[in-house]
Image 1: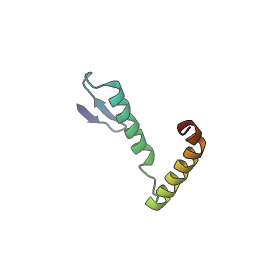
Image 2: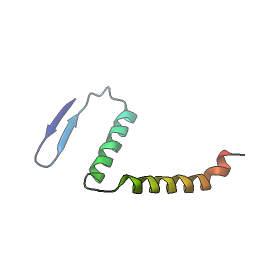
Image 3: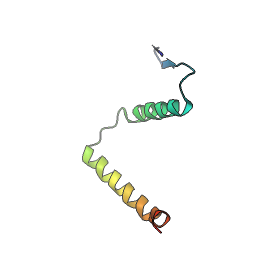
Image 4: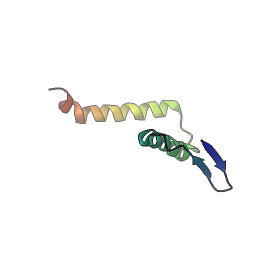
Length: 67
C-alpha cells in the first residue's frame, strides 16, 4: 500500500489482491471519518439515538423475524 498526501487530497494505492468487499468496507469507514471529523457530540446523545433507531427498527421488523 502506498499513501501519498498532496495539498488537496490523499491518494491511496492498493494491491489488486484486495477483495472488493474489503475495499468497500474501508471506503465506507473513510467516508464516515471524513463526515464526522468536525462533529462534536456527547456519547450519551449517540447512545440515545442508537437506542431509538434500534427500538424503531425492531418495531418495524419484529413480525418478519418472529413467527
